[in-house]
Length: 286
Image (tube, rainbow, N blue to C red; front, side):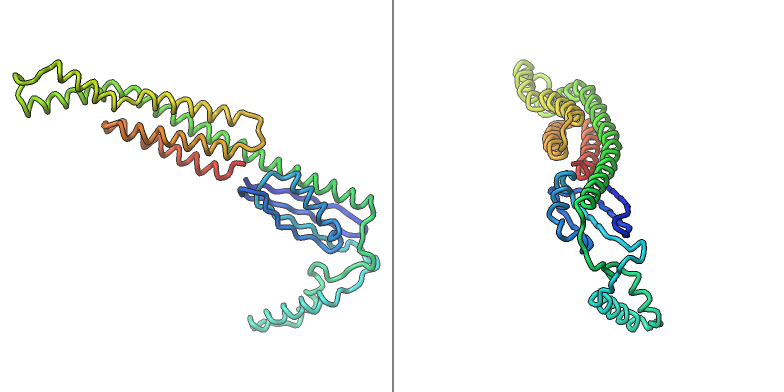
């Protein structure tokens, strides 16, 4: 699921910008970019993010810019590298490079302080801001999840309605098959040569193979279980809902293979269409 969190705060003469965003993924995949000031705390930062964010492809950036002129020193390595790259781009694009040097000093990590370290109190502040951004990100995901839930409930309800129509068509389908089989037999043998008792026996055997009572019952049960699972207070439901969808798909396919009725097959197509929409949405559910 997508999520976004951001926090800005002041720390030792610097404006700290903390930004994170997530996309759905099967596992927690973190891409962390932090300013040199926070390098010694990288493991702790990763642990906080791993603990706070349930799986997903996560990008987190923590950077800063100076908010005053306290004891700044130029980072010559960064200046030279920025200048080289910008100069090369300007030459390639054949544009004026007279202000490239001015642009260099607007880029991050060009200036550093002589003592790049955090006090215990400052680190505690950074921790609290990271946790606050994680909460903001998780709220973003929760709000998205609520909207997804509404859509999933609607899709399941549409499947139930189509299933109810399938049940209503079942008696008509059975009678239609009986009439067709008897008519075909009459055309082949003639009415006087038909053993009607034997015909009824064979008909019962044939119609038993067409019976969809079990499939309808199981599909309805799967729909109920799907809704119940969404209402559970589990942190992760996407995989479980995906397994339920597999079972729903199996029952729908069996109903379709047994239908032998045009209108019933149309309803099966409706159910399969709604199920595919559900499966697509579940790709965004944790």
